Amino acid sequence: MKLQLFSLLFFSLINLQAQVYSYKTKQNGKTITHRITMDDTYVVETQYVVTPAEFILTRGGFYTKIANVISVDFEFNSNFDKDGLKQMELEWSKEWILLSKKPKDINGKWLMAGRMTEQGERRRDTSGPRKTMKFLLDGFFQWIAYNTETFQFFGSGGGYYTTEGGKYTEHIEYFSRDSSRVGAVLPFNYELKGTDWHHQGFSSKGDPMHEIWSKRQ
Image (cartoon, rainbow, N blue to C red; front, side, top):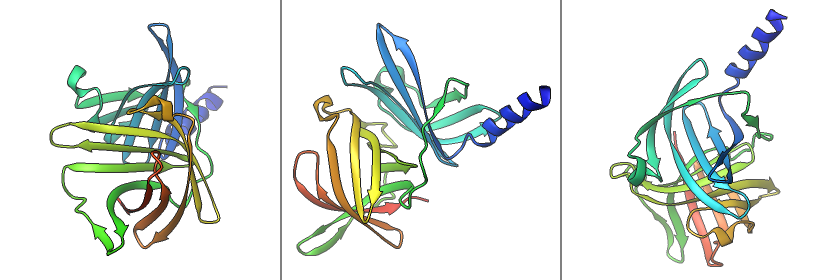
């Protein structure tokens, strides 16, 4: 029996990387969903209410892990003006529900690198502190716009996605700027070109777009 428990715990901790998890808490009469998205080096925690749709906060950055404790140095924290947090520890528990689906070819952290215009590619520097990053992992996505130096937060949204035959479709589950967008389904064409991801379709506002995202190492 002890061997079985040890094996289960060991298996859980070894696999506490490159996964998407969820758990729920209660606060002020609200049921808050915590979405944890983590690859081998980076983790994002986002909190939101499903019904009625409400965005609570998002925060994330590079992490280290000892046993089941994850120590995060934030690159962004949407609640920074209120709590001033630049670091945090997350502790895995059996309440975390594994959500990860089959790995996709677009898994990764992607930085907004430019757009296609009538004049051709218009690139921008991705090394500066002002970033827009999209984190895709095992069927789930989140974009975050932020400044790593000032900790300014400009917005975020996310949910789950599907890919099939060059089509990428987002299903929005939370959106910091406008909760009325929750439930929207946004289809795009996508193509991987080297370390670039070309993403073409219409924005949540209905505007045509052809974005270029560069894979973050």
